[in-house]
Length: 330
Image (cartoon, rainbow, N blue to C red; front, top):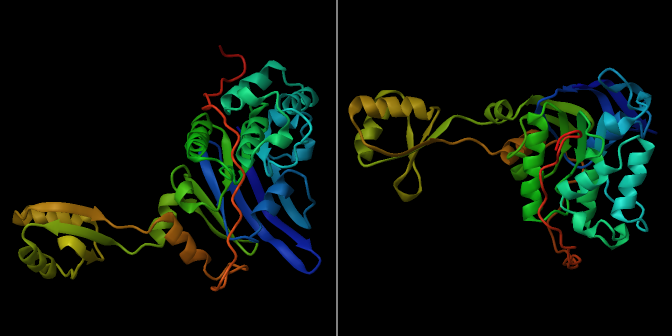
């Protein structure tokens, strides 16, 4: 499988610099989350990688090659940047057939991916009648059409219902387990935490973090333990003797700063103190992300009155998606 390699990538629009000497690498076999505030340069970077825009300087390559150098690109790279551009007058099947023919992909693959993303039942309907969620599924079907080794998805859960969000989570995990290179942009931190292995975080076009999700959260979390015991006073004395201070929390629990559960558990076991609850408290991905990007958000909302949003259109019913077969399998 191929790596995505971004090297000193810069993109300027007049006096504005959307991407600023950006360098990172996306490796196969894991889901890499591409995070950052609005205007951070995520979508611009993905467009540059796919040859949809030209860099001011630097390179964005896939397996050492420019995307535009691939003769049959869907066999190598599958991407979803925006589900809207598909022609509204075409049916879902015809849209995928056009892509298949232009990339020398067998027509039978079209029905495979339609079934895999759960929209086979509406394959004969015109795309213009679809809800955002169904368009999103169709866009993912197009990205998977050529069975690519590299998959790029920009906000793949946008418009999906709860079943669809669970499905995309499982799909991304499966793609990574198959050894593919997976890069996913998302604003949903709580959802990203369920499937992301590695993080690349941008702020104002610059790289802020490039590390595993665990390392990212640990780096922005002070060690703290949540504790509940049937002998709190005795436990407090033992902790104090070991140089640890406690803070009373809700429902009879205590918090111990500067320690990990393993250390507290060992102390309790040594003294024979019953422990009813013991857990490390860590920042969530969302908390760690907000802490890192607090000064890198160009579009911060102000408090005040706002108009209520209009109700969204009713979704187009789709049946549950099925696992996608690899070409040549039965």
